Image (cartoon, rainbow, N blue to C red; front, side):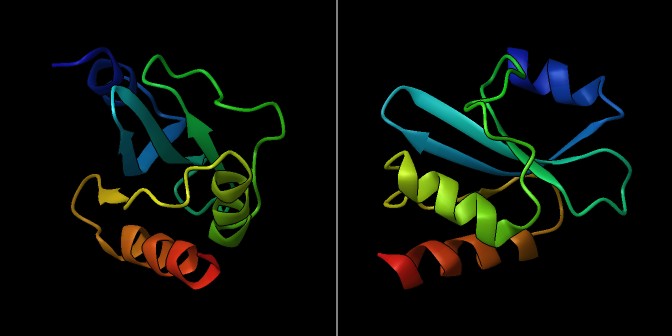
Length: 97
């Protein structure tokens, strides 16, 4: 189990939805708050916010943040059983490429 898996497994606040890998760097996109929450954060494997301008209100906002930090060429990988959010984020990133 990686440190990120341990962090997310024990968390009731963060629900990871996608994983992005670029070389040795890893970022997670996670829902923040309750299950019905529409807010997202981009987190490092240690659970720290990747950037100070978070939480973000939509996957579209996540896409813009990833683009601003030059992560838009990375294909999001699904985390968990729901692949829908990873597919939506991948589409948003490809539309802006």
